[in-house]
Image (tube, rainbow, N blue to C red; front, side, top):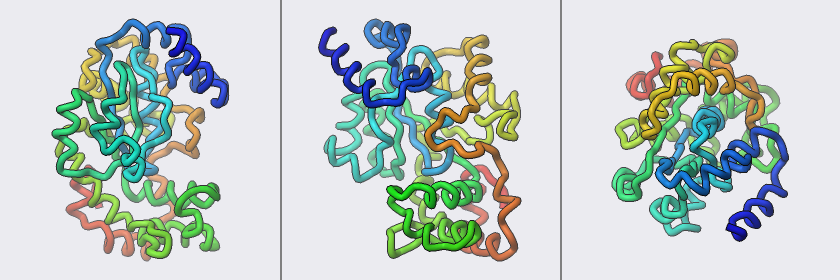
Length: 281
């Protein structure tokens, strides 16, 4: 007990102290109580395409009182070497812990997740909004691995084009390649959640679809559905507390795509692939 407390205090000291930080990492008194006593809470792997709304899904999950994020940065494929693969990472999860990851699908992952008795979620978003979000985000982050690819462009349109086409010099894959790498998650074992369903009316979505999305998440995680809790979570879901929050709205690509950008996108992403993810050309 004292060892857990010392570890928690040490890690908390390095975090910005605000209510959401304490909640999401399970550091409030009520969350600490759950961590110590709730041994039946699910262990969760939250997967998303980069810039699909990763922290929106995390917030929906970690607003549930039985769940909290593991004190771990978002996991990329290269980082799995630290645990000798996905199974090693999942073995580190305690009851109620959530790990957030950008992991392209691998054929052995379903068996690994099943063997680890972990519940998985997969978040998608309209790929046209993904490239727009990436064009805004990466240029503002000098430590972003693809910052140089975007910083070399003089305007937003040029950066969107880079997000669509990719950049071989920095290793940035095209949006088509990214969708191809993640498409296997649509076939399981993860529950697919769409950003547009989860964002709710404050982000241009629909309240009923948001409630349905939150309920589906909790059912998939084996948590049951409490109507009052779902309503409260939906009321708190849209927030600028996310470290990557910008606008959180849907359909922004329609304001930015001209005919050429639309054609370049269509050359990288087929109508079939777009529909597979649940979006119309």
